[in-house]
Image (cartoon, rainbow, N blue to C red; front, top):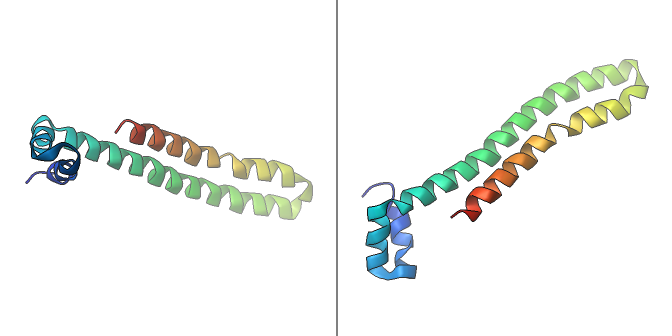
Length: 100
């Protein structure tokens, strides 16, 4: 059994045994597996990158606000910018999962 076998077996309910054999033969099970892994990686890696970026901004922003409290708005904006990375990862994952 290859990597596409679990997906091909999952398709057995929908298409019967012939559909599962067809899916395994043409590689559509591997396509679904790849799209699922890609979606998971898009969200997971984007989350890790955002956490790393916010750690640096948070540490630097805390030090800057300790010296100049009027920088609060600037630090808040800089802290929110890395969140766009996670939103982009979520959008990519949503597009990949809709392709299944």
